Length: 369
Image (spheres, rainbow, N blue to C red):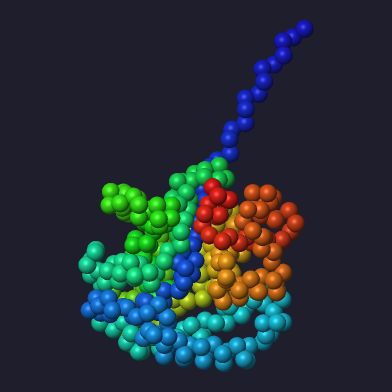
């Protein structure tokens, strides 16, 4: 009787699939919007920031003009919200807001909000000092658990591991502001502020180093105030090699044919996100893309990602409630993130995309990593 043939070698493990985590900034990484603080930055580097209420900031007249434009556009747009029952209809509405956003940006530029603005280097820079002061005063609060989530995504984990990448994609007016807020506020989000404070100075120095290492791994894709003191905001140049590039229009080009668009709308955000993922991983993917956001401006990115997660606070902000209402209206299921591990291919087996919601970054990290 011939001997049994040797058993076949075990199959090779599947290649590691990295996680590409993409985060919104205002009211996602932070507890609330910071735009009124960006509007309060002074060319002199003054840190006399107003109260956290947007009504007390230099932004107030611009906000009133924006709301007037928005209301006018809303009153004439068809179909009205109650009759937009498909994602395609909602996407068209979100894209239609480009004109409203563009008019607002031009008002800010003409109003000279940042004219003469010149940021310095390092800790003497306006953004660095203003962000540090705002975090110390509690005017900006980075969500607890953000540091651990970013670290888990960078180090790999889930879907076979592989070193990951973290991007921030935001319609905020300044990527430098975002980066400095994270530098100032991310350290207190690794284990909770009480533990962070108890560690004392030695622990603080260790966390500062840890934050600096994480920031080296993070790309911030946002608008930017012109460093050449013109007071203009950047326009999108494009995504090159997975990196977002901007330019600043000349004064004579603003409002003309040479004036481009910035990162202003839900459609602009998803275009940048799609270009980054395509350039880094190809059209067929090669990563597990995870997007976390809080508002309707995040809808298209949430639906584009392999895993779309909505941040929902216990009381819920108006933006969070609006997004939840949109999802209900267009028939998108949004389940709690703890069910993610029990789902099969993110709901694809049922032919429908499922989004997820989480109370905080701790829940997201536990579910994904």
